[in-house]
Length: 134
Image (cartoon, rainbow, N blue to C red):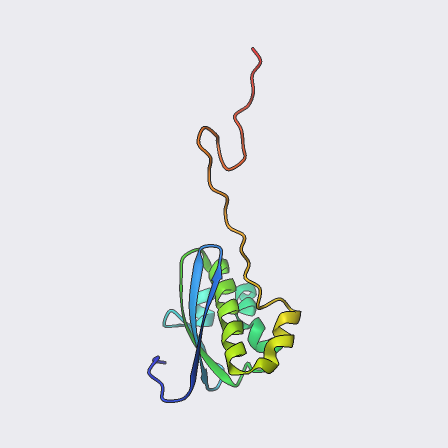
């Protein structure tokens, strides 16, 4: 499915960890496309596929909208979370009535947890070298 669709489209951006997902919603039959591939083939894990669909299922719009998105950065789990946030934000642009359902399950909240950076003179973010008295 190409982006150039004559029907009304809704755009939103979702982020998680280091992943960024750009999401477009179109009126359609429920196809989800991530990086020009079918979502089931791109995400592979059933748990990640459930994460991608959660916002649509919560608002009972799974079969009403086609989703076309691009995801960059991070891993597949992180990208799935970013796509979910993008879909939730796009659904908010469709109708404000979806706000309560999406807010109840925390699909509008950005998961801001990131990997803490390694500090100089140390093994990792918080790990120290073993202290030796003698």
